Image (tube, rainbow, N blue to C red; front, top):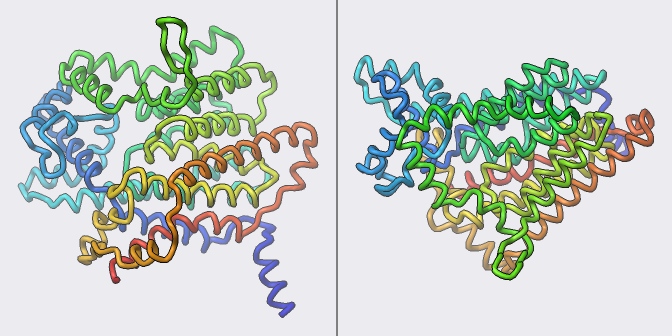
Amino acid sequence: MQKIKKYFNDFNQVTAGPYRAEYILGALIVIAAAFMFCFTKDFKLTVTQSLDFNDCLFHGKLFRYYSEINELALSGHYSNAWPKTLLAGANYSIINYATVGLICLPVYIFDRLFDLSVSFLVYEAVVKAAFAAIMIYMSKIVFDIGKILKSDEKDAGWTALCFLTSPVFLFASIIISHLDIFSILFLLLGIKYMAKGNHWLELLFFMLAASYKPFVLLGIIPILLLREKRILYLLRDAAGVMFGILLQSVVYGFDPGYQETQKFMSETYGFIGRFFGVGFAFKRNCYDSTVSYFIVAFVLICTAAYMIRKVRWELVFALPFMVMGAFVMFVQWHPNWMVLVVPFGTLMLLYTCNIRITCIFECLFSLLIIVVTALGWLHNYDVRMLNGGVIPKLLGLEINKNYMIHKVLLRKFPDIPIDIYSSLLCGVVLGMIGVFAYDCMKRKNMCGAAEKMRKWERYAVWCRVLPAIGFMAYSLLICFL
């Protein structure tokens, strides 16, 4: 018994980086998630519109792309899952459609040349394979960042494995299958070249990240304020990062369809209004408004970033994580946006002294994100996503509509108030922010001593993945019940 206990203790207390088999297992989990699941309604619309981008490109209609998509949407071209309204319009920036169109280009050309009418399943497989490859490549970027910042490859290896197996990223990006993965790719490249000291490549990749998803600016702005204190240089860097967003707006500002789509989507989804959903009333006679908790928190964090004179890498990751934590708590988020939390939270593992508790918090955070998403987007982002996956379609697998095991669970356990999930989620986020803030103060005061306290545990790292693995296994189990 003692020998067995010693074996498990030795296996858990690591002295080097992960085994190669662990990286392979992590990659297999990513590939399984990519090909087993897909939220087809949004994914099919986006990929189809990316193929329509290729049509516009080869027919000289590139600069009126949004008008072309609007005409197709109103004519019922996407009516299998979407109404004949601008809800089926092109909601993303042009670079997203161009990227997915480029990924599909070899199959697209082959399809058009020989008039094969290639099944959408082929395009889905191609795009999902690209998503899995990007995820694996991003873990390599995280490893490179770790090697640049820390002399110990062990930290770099474990942090890369944590990114590769991030349950939030697996669920919110690989399983749901949205486009936020491109933004995170270039954000990580920007951080890598920032660590290398290549300022211009850093700004270039931050610009590309913001071009794909402007929300990523919420994490980039504190980094700029932390690093640069000269106002003119700061304005230059900010303008450089936002150049891609402005360029796309100017170029497509001449396309009437772009303006029409932007207005419709803004009124329908109320993206700006989401920031003011949680706050306190600010009334002055006839003036009636809401003060956003998120905006107040964002301003405070940015102020702190600008006032800190010595740039420390743990702050480069901790401050943006605090911003995204406030985003989770105070903004009516969409599950896709949760991937913005992952890069900063994962890279903070390079510096946190409390790796075990951080892994526990991440496990709870991931579990609650999945639960809140399934409840908040009922009958959309839940186990039904397995029905849209490439492998289930090829094998004829389908979720049992009766949900037998689900009904049994509901009968056996009493109803839990729905408020408890969101309250626990916000509590976990605050816990993670507290841990990172404590670690930042401890490292400032203890320097090298704090580094010696760090201890990786194999069980803690792999237990983090359980929410995503559990979701995948449960979804597959229902097919056979």
